[in-house]
Structures are given as C-alpha cells and as structure tokens.
Length: 118
Image (cartoon, rainbow, N blue to C red; front, side, top):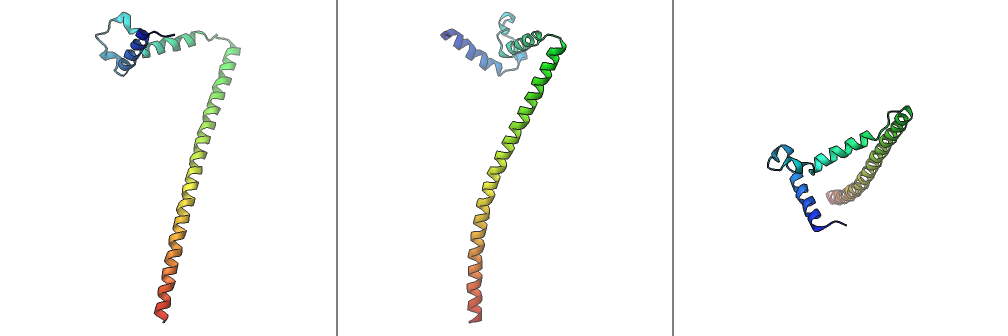
C-alpha cells in the first residue's frame, strides 16, 4: 500500500520527467536516481544482466523475438483490415447516396423530356 507522501513524490517526478534531464540542475545528484528515465534505464540494464550467454538462451531469445515480430505483423494486419472494412461501409453509404441522387436526376430529366415532346 502506498502512502500519501510516496504518491505525491511520484506525481512530482512525473511532472519533472516532462523536462529534459539537463534542465534539472537544482536537484541534488543523490535524488536524481528517482527520475523515471534514469530508473527505466537501470531496470533495462538489470534485464540485460539476467541473460545468460549460452547458445540455448540465444535460440530462445530469437524465438521470442520472432514471435513478437509476427504478433506485431498480425496486429497491423488486423488494424488494416478493420480500417478497410470501415472504408467499405463508408463506400457503400456513399454509393447508395449517389444512386439515390442519380435516380432523382433521371426522373427529372425524363419528366423534362416529356414536356418538350408535348
């Protein structure tokens, strides 16, 4: 459970994170370790430190990387197909409106042609 002061400090760091690190000159160095960008860099380093340099680990990492790329490609395909479906629905609506206007114009033209004959 988080206390009020921890929540307040987290909110403060979120606001300060919007500024470039170079502009945070008035913050003492011992407190800069709490900056979100610095914390993230350290956590990424910790993840990299946990990887064992073995052939089986390399194969496993390649499999996970390949799976992540395929998942991303499938997500992009899904998004594209949903967009094309939306475009198809819009096209159907536009076509129906054009056909309706065309039918009105044809009726008007035919009624005017009848008047010219008479």
